[in-house]
Image 1 (cartoon, rainbow, N blue to C red):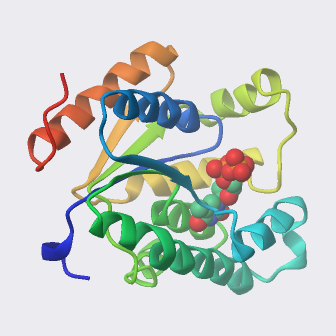
Image 2: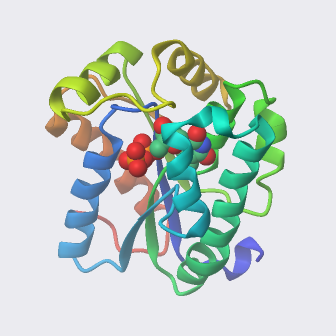
Length: 210
Ligand code: TYD
């Protein structure tokens, strides 16, 4: 699908675990929905067949080779793009997606793949119109996962590998990436998100946010 057929907007939420991106996605979704924009929320890994397989991998990543791991994320994304993302963009919807191919570049990059090679293996997937990259020191994210969420760390959330993931995220240079300092309060981070959304809408066919 060329850019010319595309009427919707693809907004992705990226960052290491515990940066609060899912909370921010939900807040933005509620606002856009209440204002009557045609918005949908989705996530990767998806709840489809590959996504479910990926969730098994969270528990014991060692059962899969690195190439198998990467291929599962790519297969999940291919299905997501074909079944949901491209059709929704064609219908002119605004998609909020929790994680997308920058996560593959960063997380599977952290296990040894070249991040740019990963990005080129994602060329089937439409580029986002905006990628919000939520950044906190890795230990802040881990503390949020353990204490606030009352959760334990899965295989993707170990400290050393997350440092590497964060470093790769910061090193990716694409015009649609906007970094957000996510160490502050939910409200202050939300204001930063709204600033980027207002700019994006002002340059799109959607009604300006106010
Ligand atoms: P996460 O958004 O934390 O999902 P959940 O809320 O279901 O735990 O994503 C799960 C993990 O998957 C996260 O640690 C990052 C990892 N991941 C990859 O390694 N590669 C990818 O391409 C994607 C989309 C996610």
